[in-house]
Length: 119
Image (cartoon, rainbow, N blue to C red; front, side, top):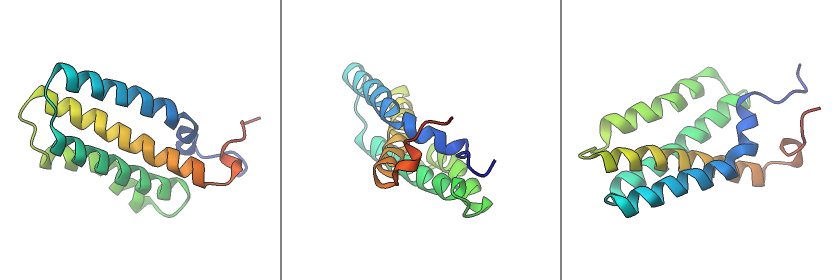
């Protein structure tokens, strides 16, 4: 049991495809709708912070990191100005882009044991 990676860490290997999908959604939304750069900036930053907090939890640093990590999306929805559906779409796609970007950076920095397939 201790040699199997945590369920959350299995997301690390899926981060590149997540970045591609969320970037595609954001580009399509911003071409068809309006670009809200402030909302997009908050969302990407929130996604990165959430991923870092959840990585700390997944690496065994404590349950407080889990609570903080999953609370970030709620804080973003409450504090970000969402005047239109485009702003909401920017918030969601930007959050997941930032989340996947942080996981990808972790994958590139972390030793090769994350890249090994589970047998």
